[in-house]
Image (cartoon, rainbow, N blue to C red; front, side, top):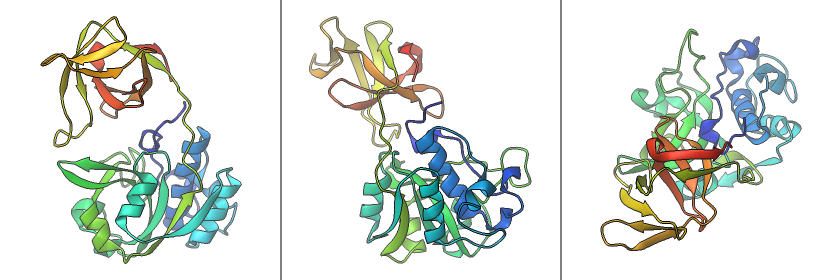
Length: 272
């Protein structure tokens, strides 16, 4: 499986069996493992990642976690990030997941989903907008896989609004981040089945422009309401995979515009 977005790669949790015997201290190595598997399109054991730079059953530092990530083949560094704006700039596209440290007692329980109060590593996968509010999609490793002692009800995609992180951290903060975003090669192709379709510009209903459009034989897509040309898709749509609900195809047009097309009218001609 080739991962085109960090939030689409499987969640990783410090309470996985492969995280023994350091489960209680493996929040950082679990986040490192999450990032490494995204960049390398593979799977790694969490305790095995820890042993690349640290002894067993002790909390790991950002420097140790950086060494782990580098040894997994992902060049990385710990950098100072002065504000939420710069954090969004790093992670928003979903191609450069990064690790932050948060004092969890400063995070509301309805956001964190657990009662651990101390410094804790979180993997920030991407930025986004939900119900008109800016924020981040986060993989919190302090859970277990389904069937475990503490299953994650959000399946590795917790929503942290900007206001929560602003209150939980004192900027500037240290962030462990890969040196470059993951290079995404065009992984697939797709087309619209039939001339008419419903297209979204965002998965947030608050910010998306729903477009009722017609894809014409001239290789362009036109808005039905006024006939305005919207974009070119001469080479078909670049297919980036389905969203987490499975109801929308994530695509890119020939002009570089990222869109969501209803799955019921989208035909995948080449898998990612």
